[in-house]
Length: 249
Image (cartoon, rainbow, N blue to C red):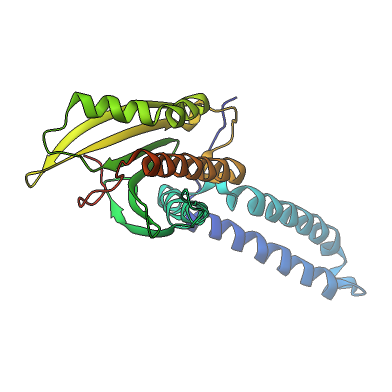
C-alpha cells in the first residue's frame, strides 16, 4: 500500500491555523454580542455557520498539518538521530556479557552522512561499531582487531565460522551480508564486518521514522544481535574493537 505524504510549510500551517482561529473566535464573539439585539439579528445565523466551518477547519489543520506524516526533511533527520542517540543506546545498555555484566554504552559524534559510532564496554569485553540509519535502510559495521597484521582469508573464515549462528539469525530477520573487509589506516590493519537491512522489506506499510513499534523492534533487534556478537567474541577469543574510530569506510 502506497502512502501519500504531503509536506505543508510551517509558515503556511501556522497561517491557516491562525486565520481559522480568528474566524472562530471573532464570529463566536459576534454571535454572543448579537443575541437579544435586533440590529445584529441578520448576523446570528451566518455567524453560527462560519464558526462551524472554522472549527471543522481547525480540526483538520490540527489532524493533518501537525501530524508526523507532514514533517519536513529536517524534522525527519532529527527523528533519525533521536533513534540513534536515545532509543538505540537504551537498548544497548541492557546487553550483558558472558558473565552477565551489563555494558556501558558510549555514543560518538555524528560520523559519515547518516550514522554514529558506539562503544560498548564491560570490565572484560568491548564492542565498537557504527550504525547508519538512512530513513529505511540500516547499515551496521563491527570492527575487529586482527591477531596478526598479515591475517587474511584464514581469519575471515574464522570470523564466519565463529559468528555463524549470529549471522544466521540476522539473515532470518532480513539482514544482508556479512561483508568482511580488511582495511589499513595509518599503517594499522583491521577487519570490518558489515550487515545491512532494508526496513522497507518488512511486513509494515508504516513509515519507519514515524512508527514507534517498528523503531522499537529495530533497536531491540540490533541490541540482540550485538549481544550475540559480543558473547561469541568472548568465547572465541576475538576482539571486536580497534583503535580506529568506527566509521563508514
